[in-house]
Image 1: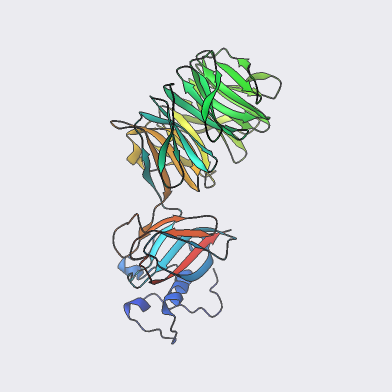
Image 2: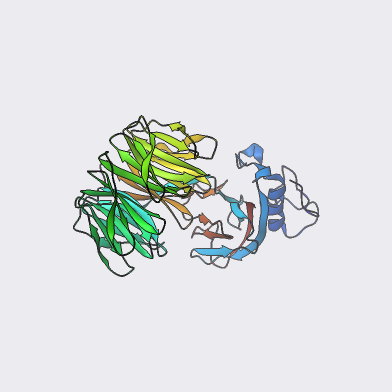
Length: 429
């Protein structure tokens, strides 16, 4: 990456904040130091262990240099250049000899909400908020981006699925097999089926479809009336997804994938698995999470094949986030696929089952069932780091947005009232 005209590097052993004078007579040493970081991708003396490891200098381009004044309370800085996604942020202040550094590649799990219920089975975004369906007392929670609250307490036991249709939020339940509807003000019953459970909801061709058990029926709602669309030979329809102009359904007992072209249901694939737990599209293909061997299958529109064989009992959730495909497993491991290879993420969640995934406000949320505790909603997002100063502080940099913004917390090294901070933001096109 070429150094911008007029920006001269100090070299590997110069640190203006440590009292080393600028050999070129420059006075704006803080901003110049950030420019040097851009040129060298160095956050201090590499030989002293202050180098930010794993940085690929060719992967980033400079987005913007500048300053902001601390407030002592969380603040969001909007950048002038919004043509790139921010991938890396460095902040310098009088209280930090080394820059505070964070990258979007470094993410961590945090508990967003610990419910009073056994598990969080479903997640969906509706009207600018995140909703979570739970069991075993049929509660629905809502997150407005800052706090969680109870949105609905139903007479049903479990809220298995959530979906938005025609401006309203719908929920599938057990053990009465109902479909609930929320119009933004009031919850009510939309449909009381003949089945025990509504496992999946999906919108296709202007209608809302519901997959059920224990008799493998699929129901359809046209906005005014519910009718039966399909009666399958398998015991349950666990998953639904739209792919390439058709509606696909995953079944339990024989692990089959059905397809509906708008006129006729037929069998698309008969796997060797017991059930097709989840379906999702990614990068032009359809993916299926299975049980009871935790495989992830892929369909390219012509043929099915095995994409990944995990160590899980089941893959209960699939979702695309930040350009990658994520999969939640039955033993609490989150898997990620970048289009070429799969990897498993932090195993600190090994005591939970990951039931649901949803993207909200630029972050990935996970609904779980934690052994020995109640169901949680986990937040998988940016992990802020300090380099060369104190240990990790969650109040440091709370987020790096992909929309030309970054947010800093209340940590003194990045947000002391009236202190002027210098920042450097890097990104990718």
